[in-house]
Length: 437
Length: 169
Image (cartoon, rainbow over all chains, first blue to last red; front, side):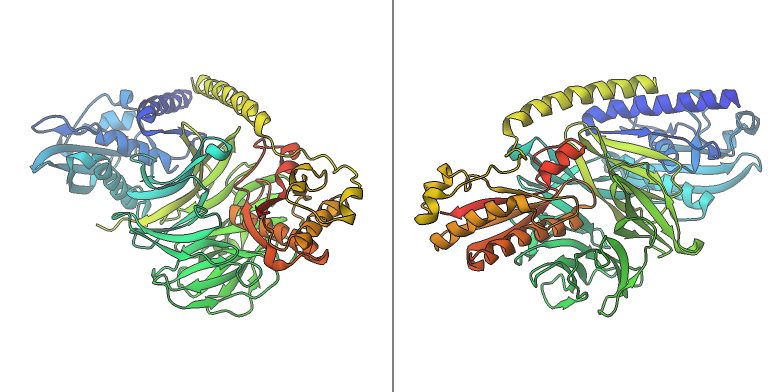
């Protein structure tokens, strides 16, 4: 047990070191804050290579990081991997049983022509000595991290029984500089923070990025013309459209699950109300009607209802209303301040910001557990929760000293990791949908 | 090792903090001192002129501060509101934008709403003192434009504010 602990510590050390190495190039570092002793032990053996120059990415290494990140696995540190089988036939099971591994992944890469690379991999149950998966994935040599994320997704799905969400992207906002000199940027990156790409830059605040369900567009709020305005931007072509710049607040856009409607908060009629609009610029339907601040709508998975923040009872609380309008029903009764809902894909969980005194933490209300509320972040200024598409993890924004930072946390709250931009603030995370191939 | 990384990081952050603090001192906006008692002996008789915006002790004060999660105007700011309302009455061509702001606590979009509520509260008070709504525009920046960036009440109290910005004098 003691040995196992030190192994894990070593693993953390290796992870931190490896990632820090990349971080200077990528601008992001990842640090696992607390581990889970009960996580499933899995050995991901370095991939072999049949011919040609060595791939630019260590695929097994990326798979290992992914599996560790989600909190459900504890992958064997590379320097503990004493044998390097690349096919199932080469696995000597006693070795891995002795290392107390439940699963082993082996694989090899080969040239697939035209700059493409083929990765063949197998997942084996160490105790049953049984092959669970044998697949090949082909990808561009320049995009091998994505191939690795796809392999991790397959492993996750086979063992956990839920689709993996490693091959997804995240969006977030950075703010670099102070006061008048602050530069804002809306960035998209892989789910592990790698491959950041700037979608839009501004000298004025940007906030509330929201993915279209097909992952092709982002809606967001920009102050570039002095007041808040909602834009929708195609992330492949970069073309964008102004969707709303009415008098007052234009905020909190969220695409409906079918992508054909956008819920927003607008105050042109006097105070912030929830509206549903046609993103093609057509009809505007008013959903709420109160003298309170009604904002931060999110859609239920069936697209029929919205959960939103309202202070109609005095302090902000979450309410649910039909997307066609009607009488809202209050959902939250525990905590002084509940706001900014993120609903899981199956509708059973609602993540929110819960404030009590000066402490703001991310809480998850679980309908399948009788609306039990559980904190998954320590505070004290945590906000902006966003579920992964499989709800295994969520992203949120926090502060470290003067800086805004992002955390990813497993849905059970047991594993947290920090994604830190080396310069300035990182905020407003939004986890994108499954990628369409 | 992990601890070393953390300590290094903490040390780096301290350096960053110190650097920020220095910069902010220079550009810290109007301090949150209760407005001085202002006698309008020179101005009550005559009409304000644009020059008074730079010289008049009352008109030079352009920030109204609020309590946490509140948007009601505190009594000590009534005098500022009164002199700016008089300026708007005296100068029908004058235009102002009221910029509503909040501290960092709570969510960004909710704070946009709260900032707007503060801007609207100042606008209503100006209107009550005879200013015309057509002269006033309200913009909310929520928590996006802090004048102070530390995570404590002293800073938060400076950020919970509505700023009066003249766009036409």
